[in-house]
Each structure stands twice: as structure tokens, then as C-alpha cells.
Image (cartoon, rainbow, N blue to C red; front, side):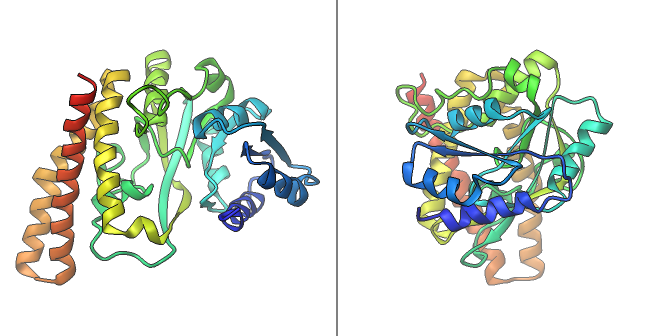
Length: 300
């Protein structure tokens, strides 16, 4: 219940969509108290389905349960710590109406609950679930086009495609040795490409804001997160051998474009913030690398 008010704000953002033909499935993952509150607050709302799981099954299995309970042509996923722009659904629908694609997603923008940390470079916004510098077609997050996958809090699929693929692999994060493994969207979208020869169509106008709570702006938390993200990237290579292309492209852009540009700007216009961001960019890159090497050891 600690985040129930954030959950309510997420639901209200969905109820306020400009696109009317929507169905909202609220999944409670094995928490009876939360389920009772959801039923009290939203059980009588015509456009809402309340789906309570008897036991905690984890994020990916809960998403699958929500998709199975839904009846629409498209299933879109959003987390309970996010706020959808009022045009979010309309922008996703426009993609499906104008493009022959199996999946579509959009941009995650930051909602800094405790203020934006001046030391965190935009290249590493992905650590806090926000679309980062270097993402997107040609590495530009403002350009629409096909990408491997978008964040799980802003991704959608034609429902028949999602069910045909058997949804997310709920075992990720539960296999022996991979308790810290993340990347359910990566794995599913790799199967999507293998089956349909297409990725996710990215529409930057389909925006969802992700709340970045104060603990997620702690340098210690970010460093720990970077390590396990590196580990996850190595783990994903075991399950999805072709999954590392986007990471390789991003690393190349980071080392040969973003970092040199930052150093050049710092040289011509020195600032404390610029120095801190270059320093932290180096630290986080190193932590991702260490996590990856640890993954090489674990998955050897």
C-alpha cells in the first residue's frame, strides 16, 4: 500500500485518455489488501477490469495475466509508477492504423519526484527507466521508426501477436543464477523479430512519464543498478544471442561521439555539472562493464 496513491494517479491518467475506446485491466499481483482497495475504488467503473491474482507471480507473469484478461485488439502495458500523457493511447492507435506493424511503443519521460540529479548524464537515463540519449532510429529519440524494443512501461502489441508468442517469458529472473536478470521486453521482442521479421515501431509522441523516486537518484543505487544491468545484458545474450546489437551501437556512440563531445564542451565552457556528468558517465560505464564480466563468469 506504500505506493497506492501513485497507482491511483497512474489509473487516473488512463481514464483521462482522449481515445475513448479503451479497456483498462488492473492486475493486483497477489496482495489481498491492495486488491480490496482496487475493487472499492474501481470495481464499478465500466471501462475497468479488476484482475486479482491469488499469489505473487512477478511482473512478467502479471502482465501476461492482464493481456489474457483483456479483450481489445491491442494490449498496451504501463507500470504503476508511471503517468500516461492524455494522447498516449491515441498515438499508439495511430501507428496501428497507419502501419502494418505487430508492436508499437513510445517515449518514457522523467518525472523527478525528488528533483533532477545534476550528476546523472542523459546517456544513462535508461538506468531509471527513461528514454536516453542515443536511443531510437539512428540514435535519435525524437525520430519515429523501428527499434528492437521500448520500455515495458510503454510498449504494446497486437493482442493476437502477443498471445501467439505466449507473452513474456515469466521465468526470466527466476532461473537458477539469474535472480537479478532483467530484460523481459528484450527477450519477447527478439522472438517477435524471429517470428514476424519486425521489431517495435517507436512513436516518440506516445509519451509516458516515469516517476523517479528519491532512492533512484542516489549514486550508490545507480552504481548498483548499472552493475546488474551489465550482468543482465550478458545474461540476455545467453537467451537471445542476437540481442546485443543495439547495446554495441550505443557503446560505440557513447565512446566515439557523446563522450568526446562532452569533453569538448567542458573544455570550451567549464562547469561543475559538466565535470560531474563526465565523471559519473565514466563510473557507470565501468560498472556496466564489470557487471557484464561477472555475467561472463556466471554464464560460462
